[in-house]
Every structure is written in structure tokens, then in C-alpha cells.
Length: 300
Image 1 (tube, rainbow, N blue to C red):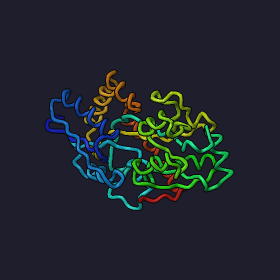
Image 2: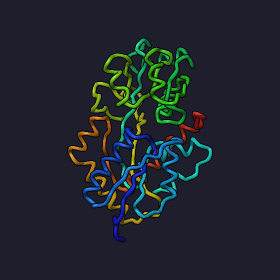
Image 3: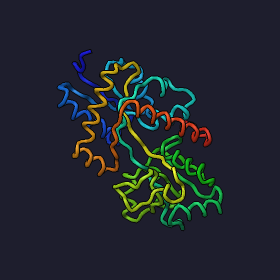
Image 4: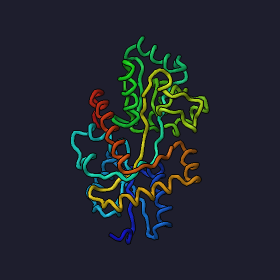
């Protein structure tokens, strides 16, 4: 199969400007020079990422329509939504992991806690009195809170919002006690002293905020809840094209200038093989399906 011989479309299931869009445009710019064909980024947002995912799942498996996958699309939505028009585990083939970004647990600055241990003690002393906001039921921000509840046994009430623009003012004012937020979004407020950081949700500290300890190192080993992004295609994608795309992705993301740019924005690139990505998605799906079920979360 001669590939490519026409434009390639990378589908982003979210609005422009976020991490999935940034990664897609970095790939598109490089591939266009390397492959000699147009590489177009299309944003098809809505329904928790399901609109764009459904479009790619039903596209021809010829290597010309690809999807920026996310933890929501591949590991959460299958358990969160009662019915999907595509199968997250069967309708896609893995190409490469792209990058991840941690969330950070932040609290209202007037809350009398300075670390995770103090927060857990307060929550146990006052069951269901503390609240945590998120950008919606089933999002990675919500699931981060549910994972904390499962691993500590604390009872804190979830308050879903439509997005960060809605919950951040309530966090700063004290209407809610805490949130798990994307590190890049929360960092300016942390640095300004408007909110207090308790812990990072990745297993290792973030280079973008090395002074913030991880939740895992504060007595919850194994706690990990990160937003991650991958490249996938429709099931049936020729193996030769799959492997070529995987290699092209690795070449782009490991360029020093690209590494530096992504890390400065809080993203940690980690391209891998299709087999490695498949195993990772399976483990993430099992983990988050358990958390979704235990939490009783349903899509808004």
C-alpha cells in the first residue's frame, strides 16, 4: 500500500487551544514537511469527546483519518455512558502514546490544611462537610477525587460544574473546599497565593512545579490520576501504516525543541509502540471503570 498519497486528517474531539489540539498541531506541522502531503487538524468537540471519537471509529481505515485519544474517550466514557455509538476498546487500533499532564489537588487558602495528612484528618473529622469541584461528572478531575476517596476512606461531596471557568471563582472565594485541576491551569493561581497546592497526581513531581509534592509520596503510594493523550486510528488500519505513524510520532515528540516546548506547558511526552499503548489503555480502562462504578457517576 502506497501511503500517504492524499491529505491526512487528525481529529481532535475538543475545542482548539487545549493539550489535545496542541499535540495534534505539532504532529501536523512536522508530518506535512516529512511526508509531503497536507496534514489537517479538525476540531469536532462535544459529548465528552464522543462526537470526534465516533467520527473516526466510522471512518475508512486507510491511514488518512486519525484521532487524538484521551483518558476520557478510551478509559472512562465506556463505563460512564449507558450507551455509546462506538466501542472504545474494539473500534480503534493503537498507534502511540503522546504525552501526559498531571492534575493537582488545590484547596481554598483559608482552609486550615497545609498537606495531605491534614486534609485527610479534617475530612474524617467532618464527613461530607468538605466539597470538591470538577469540570463535570466523569471527567479526569472528578475521577481524581473519587480515587482519593477510595484510597483514604474520606467522605467529601462532589460538586460538578460546566468547566474550569465556573469552579475556579468558587474555589478562590471559598464556596467549595478543593478541586483537582489541570496543573497548567492552576499554576498561576498557586503562584499568586490565591489557592494552596496540596499534591500532584502523577507518581513523580512535575518539572513545571518541582516544589509541589506528589500525593503518592504523602502516604498514598500508587496514587496516580493523570490526563493523557494518544494517537489512534480506526480498527483495520494496515499494520505497515500503523507502524510508520508510530515511528513518525516518536521522531517528532523526541525532538529537543518539541520536548522543551511541551514540558514548559506541563506536558510530558512519552511516545511508545502500538503494543505498549494497547496494554496501557487496557490497564487504565480497568482502573477507571472500577472507580466510575464505585462512585456511581453518570454522564451529565
